[in-house]
Length: 573
Image 1 (cartoon, rainbow, N blue to C red):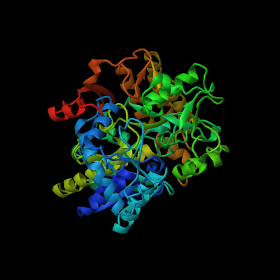
Image 2 (image 1 turned 60 degrees about the horizontal axis):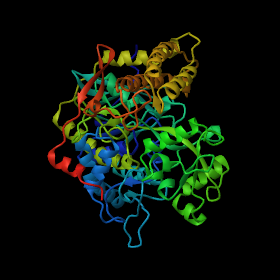
Image 3 (image 1 turned 90 degrees about the vertical axis):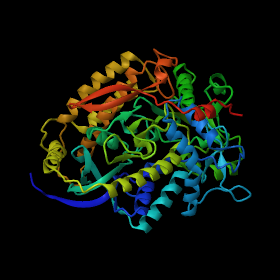
Image 4 (image 1 turned 45 degrees about the vertical axis):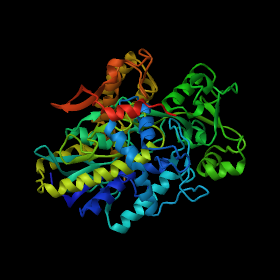
C-alpha cells in the first residue's frame, strides 16, 4: 500500500450537495467554519431539482386560516404518529422563515395578485400550503442556494465519492474518498461531518430517482456505528411515467393533481371515489399509490399497466403556465400533449422516510460529530411523507445540521487520522480490479432491483420478505466477487461495484424492518397484516451494526408533551 493520496482539511465536511447539504454549508460558513462540500455528481445536478410541486410552509398567503399547528397536525397524521414530534414541531414552526430567507437570497416564486408568494393545494395538507415556481420549485431552490454558496466561497469537490467515514475513538475524524474521473484517492480530515446524500431508490427497478440515489450516506453512517431508523417506510409515489419503457418511473408531479388532474382507470371510472371519497386525488401518497396498484392488479389498468391522469379539461394556457415542465416532459419523451389527452402513470419508488437516526434540535446522529439532514435522516416524516414537506425539511434541518456541526467543530480538538483505516479503505475500494471471477456488477444490480421490486414493493408479505433476505444474502456473496476490467479512469463498472455495497446494506435494513413490522401503517403495507396494530404504534425499528453483523432492535416512540397532544386532537376545521 502506498500513501498515494491527497489530503484536505476542513472544520465541517458536508457529503452531498442537494438542498440539505447546500443549506447546511451556508449555515456552517455563517458560523465562521471552514467548509468542504463533496458531491458524487456535478454541482447543481442534485436530486432536489426533481422536487417539482413546492415547499410546504404555513405562510397563510392564500388560506389565511393556516398556521404551524395545522401543518404540524397534517404532518403527524400523514406519518401515522410515528414521526419524531419535536422534528415535526420545529419543521412546522420554522418553515415560513426558511422560505422567506430563500426569497431574500433571490429565489423567484409565483405570486398572488397582492404580490405574496402563491401557494397551491397538495395531498394530505388541510390548506393551500405549497410555495412554488410553476412545477420547477426544486430547481429554483438549488439555483438559489448554489449561487449563494459559490458567492460565499464554499469549497466544492465535484464528482468525488466518499467510501468510508474515518473515526478516532468513536468520534468522526474524516472521510476516505476517490475522484470518479481519475480514480485518485483523497482523504478529508474534519471535526464534524454532515451527511446529506439523499435516498435509496436505485435499489428498485421502477424509480423516480436518478443514478446517485444508492443509499451511500446511510451505509457510511451505519458502517461507522450510527443507528438507522424506520427503514421499512419506503414511499412509492403514485404517479411516475409508465410509457415508453425508457422513461419508466420518471416523476409526474403531484402538482398535476393539486391543479385539478383526475385519475381514471381504463373503463373511464374515477376510481379514487372508492378508496378515499373525501379527498379523492388529493389523498395521501400511500393511499393513491395502493389504489392505482389495486386497479391494475384487478384488471382495470391502462394498456401499459398504469392509470390515466387527465388535466386536459383545464384550458391549455392554464396547464402550460402552471405545469410547464410536465407539458414539455410528456411532449418530448412520450409524444403526448397533456393539454389534449391523459397521461399514463403508475407507482414509482420515490422516497424513503427512514434513514439515519438524529436528534431533533441538532440533527446529530448517535456517533459524536456525525450529523445528517434531508432524506438521509429519519424522524420528521414518520410512516409516510406529505408532498412538499421534503423541501421545507431540507431547509429547516439543513440549517440546523450546519449550525450544530460548526458549533461542534469549535468545541473539539482536531482528531487524528489512523493510517490503518485508510489502507483498509483503499484495499476494499480497489478489490474489484483483482477479482478474476466472471461476475459483473451490472448483473448483480439488475438482480437486486428485481428482488426489491417484486418482494419488497408496495405490498409485502412474510413469505416474500423471508425470500428476499435469502436472495440478498446470495447477491452479497456475488457482489463481493464481482470484478471490473480496465483502468481506474472513467470506469462506471468500478463505481457501481462500490454503490452495490451500499444498496445491499440498505436493502437488507429495509427488508429486516419490513419483516418485523407485522402491521400496515403509512407507506408500509403488509398483505398478511392489513390493519394498524396498536402494539406497533409506540415502537420503531432500529438497525445497527454490532460485531460486524446487522442487528435490529425496537425503540419506544418518544411521548409527546400534553400541549402538542392537544394540538393534535383539535379538529381540522
